[in-house]
Length: 162
Image 1 (cartoon, rainbow, N blue to C red):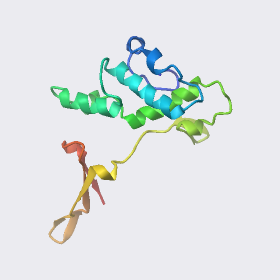
Image 2: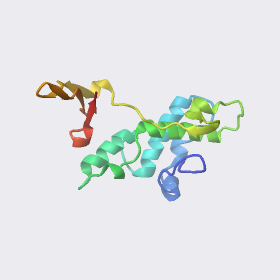
Image 3: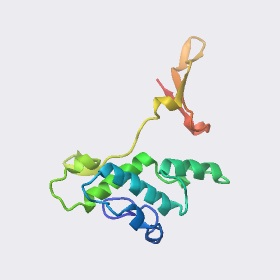
Image 4: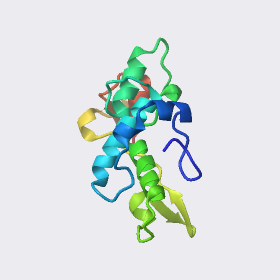
């Protein structure tokens, strides 16, 4: 899960071994309760990235790291939970020896007759946004609307549309 031919690098092999994989990955790759395996694997990857953390998801860890860094940078944060879940599902697919699994169920897609991993791009959920009235200059609209991510208050959280 920390990187191979079909998944990206996630922490170091040393950190992966020290993060107690036996506790989190006991049932990993079996066909029983895949959703629970994904949750447990994400908790494991939190420990790989930052040992002894109480965070249970990478989104929580991202928030913690961002707000406790002296000079936070988005590039220094781990992947989002959504992207990580796609990563974990690809790992489940790779570990399973059952040939009847369809890779498209594990976030691969066919592009030009090739299987490629889907990217984890989700828009900001509506419950975390507010709409602001359109901005006009004279009679011409400059921007039709703004969406603000309420989870953060940084300038990168402003989104324009229209």
